[in-house]
Image (cartoon, rainbow, N blue to C red; front, top):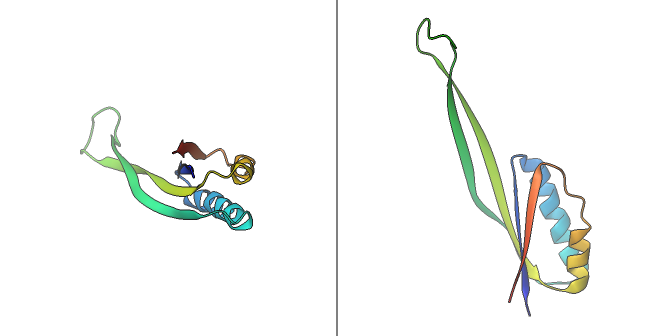
Length: 102
């Protein structure tokens, strides 16, 4: 039976975990085999910005970082389950990719 691989990523960890729990609840309700959510490595984007814009004074920097959290869920490609997954309300900060694998 084909599988659906769902990749989720976001900068907001709480919203990401809420969407993952909704998807796993749907899999439990429809009694479809699933695995996950698997935590993938967090991507950390770092940026150092000079505090003084004109170059006067000592060299001091502000360090900023943005974390991108990722999750992976595999479930059987049952038509009813996928239809319910498509209807899940996904916040604007969360990105989702659904891929059907043979």
